Image: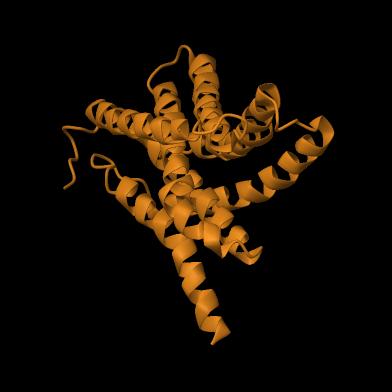
Length: 234
């Protein structure tokens, strides 16, 4: 019955990301995005993993960060992981999905960014299981997967602002990427620091702050929708 065990692991790998994706999709209450673009966004997130993992390994091998020093951990957390992973997601979000005619309200940035993030998190889970790290799956359900969702909200919030103005488009685009990189890097820094016992608690605190920001960001963009009075849903 090994196939059944593999199937269960596959379902467990995908379920948290799909659940969050479903929730975010149904928060788009004024002008919902086409389902086919939502599914494409999830696929882009899966593809982004295969862009970021080899590049992260290449950067890590080239720069040889010393994980016993604060600067080395910072380099690994912010450059090798955060910048490359969020940059890989951003390529699809800003380079492709943002150009769609359906990206026409601020909340759309959150929808598409979170979908990419959930595709990324699901594919990461599947690869971890494939590599024999099933023991990490349960922990990732409550840490890495929600973290990618929060990072998606952060990136999507600022990119959503780009759709609202003809000015400062470059500024908000850079801010969308930079804010996600900063939060991701900080989370990873706390999580992987070994030379100061207990510093990992900071990862939990940063997640809690991220949850609060995500809640506020979604409410703000819902209220700013140009379709708010035209086509309410729910």
